[in-house]
Image (tube, rainbow, N blue to C red; front, side, top):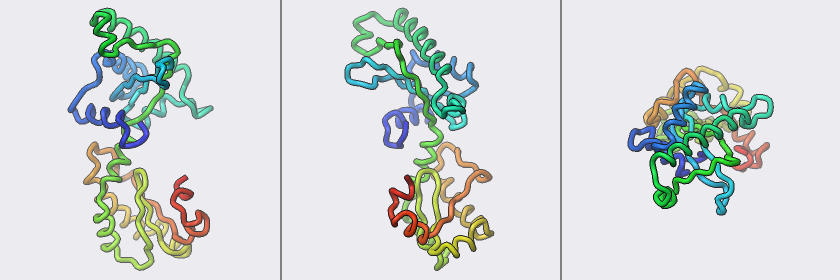
Length: 233
């Protein structure tokens, strides 16, 4: 899961909403992961990295960003190889037992229930981060325009939304210094947060830990060639 348009995100969202549930054969593994690592697993997605189906992989879709952090190696900033191996091993045990006990071979092949665990690549994602992005994205443009109109400050160039936050651009660096961490900055933050919460379906945003950014058109034009790709790269 990387984008709100990803099918894995959409299927995981349905699980979070209670519309669907995790596959029966994956439920024991999800419970095992949650208990062993003290996290919340929403979904498990098994597929292959190639058309030949020779490189199987398992995506562990955790609910919270902090939970994903538990599976990162703080030294290399890659996934923790030990935990990847532990989960891959458990995956092989659980799916093997499920296949043997529940389905005849012809049904397993028909439904694609023959899971390959040899050389399984385990990786991790979190639902919270993308759900926040979606909430911010779902704010209608007219509400952003209305907010800018209500603030009614001629020194503001524009309000730009990206990912799970927003940036209010002043025109000059001097104006930016004037408003950075000011009482008005705090007020703008409150105003934006009140709008954002209306689209925060799962309640992930917390007022005390949320802040919009301030920047200047001068900085955008001078240091990023007035190019959004360079700015958010």
